[in-house]
Length: 138
Image (cartoon, rainbow, N blue to C red; front, top):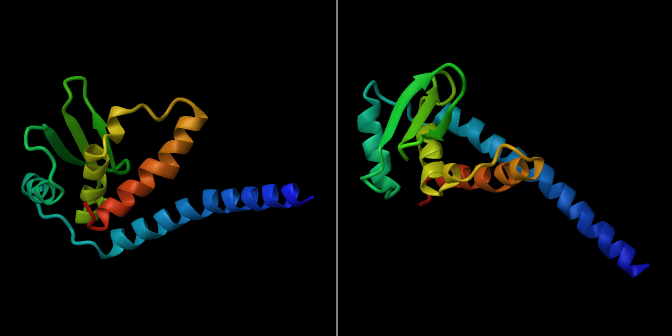
């Protein structure tokens, strides 16, 4: 009987975490989108400043641009990176920091989007880590 209660308690804690962690991240990102400093019209200068702050290797080639399809980053075949920031929600320092944190943490070096388990790891590990990093932590 005690083992069943312990198992149910752990299961409840796990399910609570599965719900709570993404909700907290969404809340932080919404707050950042509303209160983060907007980027200037010179995205390359902004990239250089934030990149220096996060101590990202100077030799990595990173391109930055704006889009209307949401903010995201990607890795190219030549090991360069692209950061696309949404005109409305991601065109601010927090959005840029978030995407640079994905690059710094090596999230783009892994393939997360094929299996359900990989997607879960991405949303429960990589996304919260980039969100916390974007708050100003290195």
